[in-house]
Length: 155
Image (cartoon, rainbow, N blue to C red; front, top):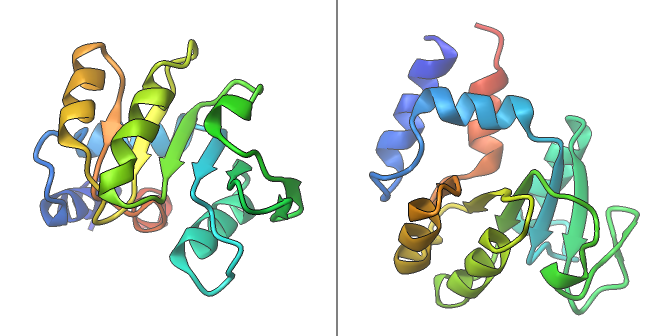
């Protein structure tokens, strides 16, 4: 199975037919370096902590965004996305769908126009459509861990 075929399988599992195609997901995983993670957890047992930890071990610069933590993954936690001064390549959102739209819109309004990634089971269709109409790359209902593994596996 090729990387693109593996990514196509993951795309079929997603509930958003408007997600970027397999080739674009591959490009995202290969080009992104700095990622703000909104909703990163202090609890190492939760996916909202395990997935960013995994990405950090793969060389991504993870900037934690959690208003209830001082430090996560050895880095100062920002209270909100607005507190992230560094340019971002991607914003990953680990918040419930009811809250995700606000974070998606805030990320899409950043001047560097980062990729906005809503984790598995998280969607904000209205805000995603608005961001996509402005040329922002948005991924919904997909796990960055699983996509990274599929995109980088030696085949």
